[in-house]
Length: 115
Length: 116
Image (cartoon, each protein chain N blue to C red):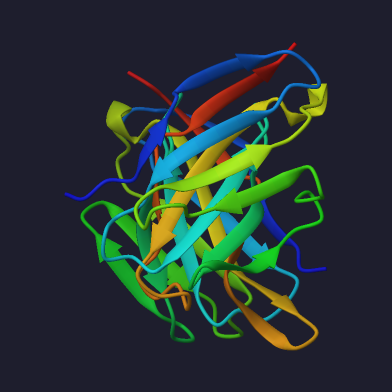
């Protein structure tokens, strides 16, 4: 079964530092997403990406966040200057169609801890 | 904005008992999806319902989509310890221009604990 791969599984960073979270979506999927989940809380949408550009983003996804698909396989989320409240599990997901007819495939996540 | 609510927040059952979680959206949904997240894991897609009144079954799991397409339920018959986890419903988020492609609004989930 195809998987969405995320690295690293755990990242600890100091407040104010930049972090890059990496994802390799399923190869024949066209829509890519980042979600986050603060411990014990619900899954929150950050951004969707299609055809090499952002198709939608949430209020959480401010100027400190950016996404990129640099080489046709990787999909990255960058946080420029991390804050304590950025500590969360970050999930990458991909789907074949943006109409979500097939559901998302989520990666196993990166646990980001900002200290 | 769109709200998706789930009840109950927690459910503790003895193995063999049934379990139901309910999902309600503040807006009409074009479809609803259900995901399961094991402790320490990631959400795993279970099913999507599209039609009004639709009922789908996966072994011991029964999923329903309400007639008004604003609510849904997941029922598990005779729970097993492998059913432990958080069950989320999720629907396409809507904006002023209509349904947003790709963006899902998740409910807060129901945490299921099964005692052997």
